[in-house]
Amino acid sequence: MSPRPYRSDRRTAAAEETRRRVLAAAREHLSGPAVTRVSVDAVAKAADVSRQTVYNAFGSKSGLLEALFDSLAEHAGLSLEAAFTADDADTAFAEFCKAFCSFWASERPVVRRLRGMAVLDDDLDELLRARDEMRKAGLTSLFTRFEGEEPSPDVLDVAWQLTSFESYDLLAGRDGDAARSTEDVARIVAGAVVSVRKGLSTGA
Image: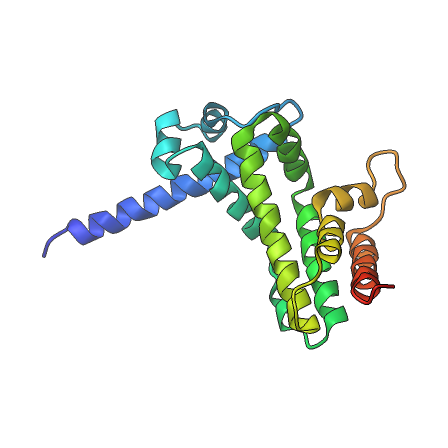
């Protein structure tokens, strides 16, 4: 019997383990206090692997960032199933807001750092914008399902901003501020989104 399939399985498992180790190191690295930019070299050093190993695993810096974003969502347990299977609009939007607030809370230092660094990193900025557009697409889907048509740009943009990391970060408070729990922030955001939906969609 040929040993090749066995060897192939071992290589696949080793490659996947390397990817996991690099992504875990990247998350930890980006949570540090002195990080000012995302670089393949810095992530490789944090993971104790070579720069080429990172490129072999992810193909490029953009590939690394894409995988990192997916890893952050997986690590935080981000799921929109409850939002998209809810029977009524208020519950659906409440679950949507809860899911994203929980995600923002779980990965708050890393997301804050990434968004700050994106100001000077075009690749990172482009990828973060694409992720934000995914959230907007999710909101569009919910509005369309319960309203029977796509929302107006005003309604969608306001709801989109309310569910953003920046809104969560401000409402949750920082050191020295009156902090709110993630549940409280989710409740506030969901109430605002529902109010926007009911108000602007009817022209009130």
